[in-house]
Length: 175
Image (cartoon, rainbow, N blue to C red; front, side):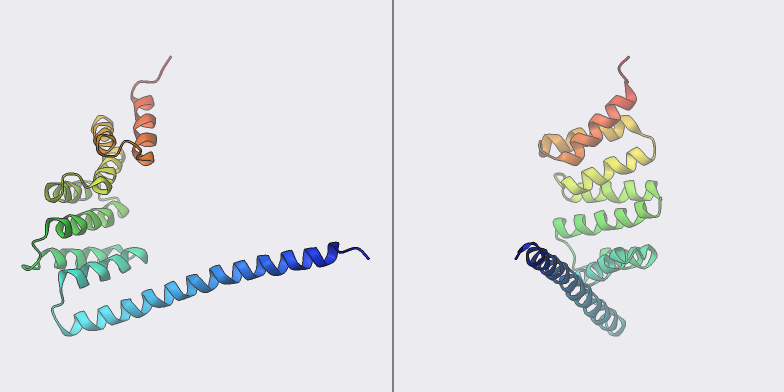
């Protein structure tokens, strides 16, 4: 008797089990996000809330690709007088820039990325995002310089390496 059908059955069961595990993990993550989303909305409708709460709610709106409410939450977070931590301010400005960039409002995004970098000059994510916004505005030399700044801080940054090389080829194609 050949064991090949049994082997295929075990492989199929293993594959289905793996797929079920990944689906289960995604369902749990989505459920956790939705519970957090609902709790934050309810909490913030009843009280002023902290900058951190506003940032977390704005981040959930970003995940859901609801950019206008995300922008509103990030702006409210920035108005919190208790928020003085440069790293926290940089994080919120970067997220706000990301929301603007997602709506193709690159001038506003650039302004926010620069604000993030004023708070935290070595914030690599904000630098990469700034380079992207410059690219979208066709400000290629500024984009290249920004990606080179990323590489001076983080030489192995693959995004900056790839984008810088691509832009340099566009600016001065070899003949």
